[in-house]
Length: 275
Ligand SMILES: [Zn+2]
Image (tube, rainbow, N blue to C red; front, top):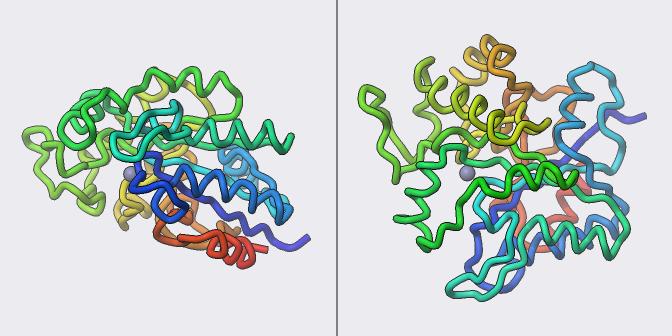
């Protein structure tokens, strides 16, 4: 069997700037699920793949399988919501449910969520529509559905709208500045412990770098030395390629919709490159 090449596709539920494929991650996902199925690809749960890859077996991913992930964890992931400018949005997980119903195929996604409730409520208030659309109320239900994993996207995304705690000054709006132990503990260890308290599930062993921004300290030092202690098995960065055996498990690549493909043909090219 050829060595596995597993594409991981990423969508953002909050990305709704219109109602067509290129401007709306929900529309794109619904379309992409049909493309994936038509081309004979199958969707597998990301935590399962990571666990198999960690065993060292060389068949850790079957041919023509891929994983789907959602970033940030706004309620647009889980609940259908009336967007103020662009109308009712089918949630990303409901797009998967529609696909399962229509195709009789399995479809699973891992949602990388911003764990801090205070941060989510603050950004919802000052940076989104101020409608209480960034909650953790759905995490346990999503896990119980059997079609979702909930994983960490850090404590507060080091978001530019959030002030770092006193004594922890650093550049915000980037994750490259999380380059020493105390900051990594704040952003990563703390988030994983809290996620595990709120919604324990196989996804809580995964981490996705905010902005896709890994850095040398986290990849080469923090995770290798502290991953086992904090209970993280893999971290995902922004490399736009399929995951292969050669990839460092602390910086596994993903494709991001809107950046790495913007049309159904773009997805077909991604899948071609991985087969
Ligand atoms: Zn993010």
